[in-house]
Length: 257
Image (cartoon, rainbow, N blue to C red; front, top):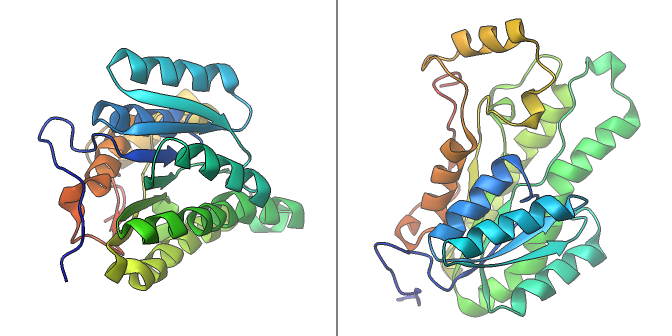
């Protein structure tokens, strides 16, 4: 059975497609939103508290000829997730979802409180569940969709002092693989991107010595840039990735193979 596909342009392959990016006001989420905007998508720039930063992302997308709107929502709250999707639908049928919003904490397991454990699971696993559940009816009606979940190399390999974080990011990989099988016949792909050490605010806590050690441990000899992640997301969000589903792409400079 042939399934409907949006028109493909070599210069703006996502032209006119509505894309929702959670946690898009800074870091990796910002880079993803800008990349989708340059590719022609109408981008819903989600943020929780950083209204000014989200507005700047919208301005940057519009400056390149794209369309974007900033929408405040805490994606761990089911009601706010529904409002986020309503804002997306107002622009047109949502075809792309990037679950990027998340939380990181570095703790020994014995020092991790139940509250911290639950916060990480809520932010990194429950939020993508809620967003997927809210957007899937629209994608099923269109018989087309691209869902990209942002995981981490520690979701693949596990990280010392990162047990709770690794568990939440490993959970999203399993979630990705299972959901991909459920919705594949409807023309919807579900993939994960698992970045390595990326230059974002999450690395700001590292000392100069720790950063240097991390760079030396990475075979390519540098930390990643948010655009290294956005390039992978852009491919998975494109019509050209129709045969890629249930996969994990890991831009990590060879740190984990």
